Image (cartoon, rainbow, N blue to C red; front, top):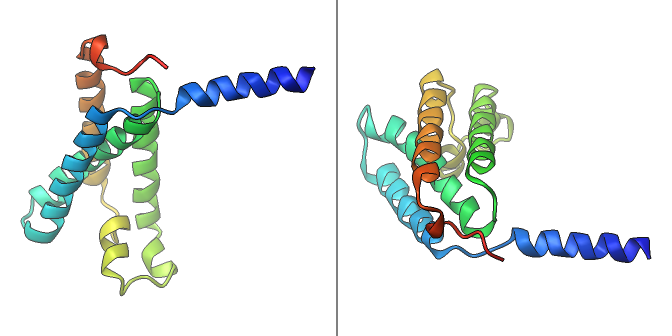
Length: 145
């Protein structure tokens, strides 16, 4: 009987954790397109390195919120920690250690050099998420199962 209760509880939790929020999904798609355009066509000293890093945490946040019912703050912090981990891996030159230095895709997606300013850009993106998403009316947030 105990396993039935545990299974039912787990099913309820998992069933209420997943969702499809089209507003976040379309925001993620638009941000992804912007990121690709920046990566392909912008080669300046501000937009590509800093605006791209600022936007990437918002892109990841929208991707998470598109499929999972997670409150704003934990989702934003989770995305921020993920961005920090990627930046730390850049510090340890993970692309070179994995032998992917000749892969343009790996170099663009993972990155190849650590910079403290990237950490600041990720943090600024996360702060803007928390400020913007917490001020949104609750009717726009998908909270019903």
